[in-house]
Length: 95
Image 1 (cartoon, rainbow, N blue to C red):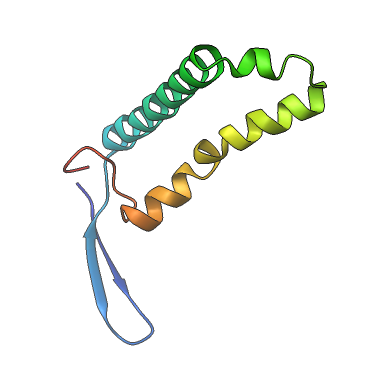
Image 2: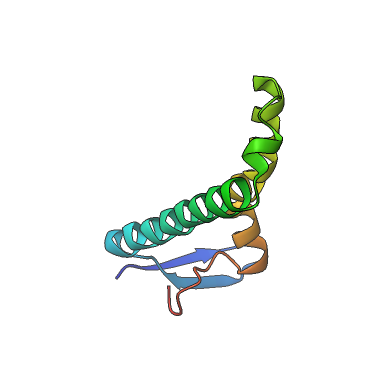
């Protein structure tokens, strides 16, 4: 693995190891599995099991799209939430 060293403007050296391509691809795949699982669970549980589909059947397309977008907010902000709360780490230990 590549060892990188950065010198800041305050003359502090920061050393870290860069992730390999395989680790980055693995991390990307884990993120995609989490996002896809969220969508599947959301649509089956909320829209079909709880009957939200019948409730919004009379709505126009713009209103339905707005409701879908509200439910998709966690996916849109997933990367930001992960960076803030997990310090850009994956849920899997060590990556």
